[in-house]
Length: 427
Image (cartoon, rainbow, N blue to C red; front, side):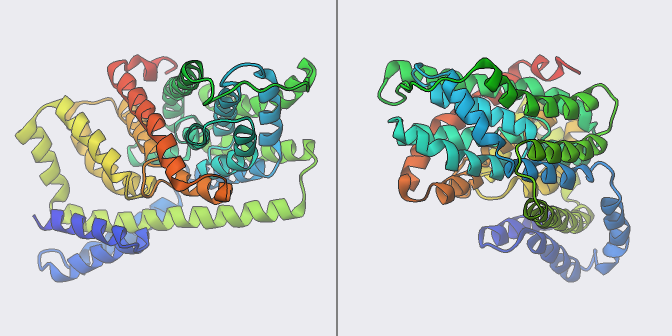
C-alpha cells in the first residue's frame, strides 16, 4: 500500500510541474527517510547503478543519434525534400498532405527527433498548405502526426531506451518497428486521400507550372536514403552495433550538410550544445528513476503489481489491455521518457510471468508512447507546432485536427496487437 501511495505522490508532483528527475528522486528519498523498514541504507547500491548507466554502451547511442538529427535539422534537407515531393504530387487532391507524410517518414528515419521534425515541417509545410487552401485542422494534424513518426520509425530514441530498460536487442527492436511504422504512414496517407476525395475543399490539388526533373528529384531524395540505409542497414546486417552506426550517422550528417553547403562552425556548436542539454536531461531522469525504483522495489511495489496481474487477474490479454490503456492515459500528462523509465520496468516482470515476447511488447509500447506527443493538454508536438506556426492557426484548430490521427495511431496499435507478424517479419 505504501508503494502505491509513493507512486501516486510522484505523479502528483509531476502534474504540479516539478522537474521529473527531482520529483522521482525526491519522493524516493522522502519515503526512504520516513519508512522505518527501508532507511537510507537502500541507497548504498545507487552509486554502482549510476556507474552502470554511465558506462552503458547501448545508451551511448542516444546522444549520437540526437546529434545526427540536430545536424540534419540545420542542413536544409527537409525543405528540399518537401519542395521536390510536392512537385511530384501536384494536381492530386491531398497530394501536398501526402508529401508531408512521406517527408515526415524520411525525416523520422534520418533524424529520429520529434521536436526537430515538427518544427521544420511547421515552418516549411504549414504556410504552403494554408496558401493552397487546406483545412487548418487537417494541415496542423498532418504536420504534428507526421513529425511524431520518429518515435516508431528507426532509428528511434525511444526504441533505444526501451531496449535498455527491457534488456532486449536494439537491433531487433529496430527491425521489428519497421513495418508498424510503415503501417502508420499508410494509414495517414489513406485518411488524407479519402478525406480529400469526400471533401475536396479540405485538401485541394496544387496547380503549379513549376516542373522538377527526375534527376533533380533523385539528387534530393537519394542522399538521405543512403544515410538511412547505411545507418539502419549496418545494424540489420549485424555489421555494426547501434552505437557504432549512430557514430557513423553523425559523420554522414556532417557530409550531407557539407553537400548542401550549410556546414559551418555555428551549426556544429548548436548541435553540440543541444545534444549536451538533451542528453543531460535524459540521463538525469534515468538517475532519478533508478533512485525511485530502488525504494519502490524495497517497499514491495513490483511484487504487489506482479501478484495483482498474475494471480488476481491471471489473463494475458487483460494485462495487455490494462497496460496499454495505462500508458495511453499517462501520456496525456507525463513525457515518454518518464513512462519508459518508471512505468515500463514495473510491467516487465509481469510480461515475463505471462511469457509475452519482449520485442513485440516493446513495439506496442513505442507505438502507444507515440500518441503521447499528440494528446492534449501536454502533447509536446502540439506545443512545437503552435510555437512554430504562431498566429496562423489556433490551438483549437490543432486539437480538432489531431483527433483523427490519434484514432489512426490507436488503429495501428490494434493492428499490431492482432497481427504480431508485422513485428516479426524482418527478425
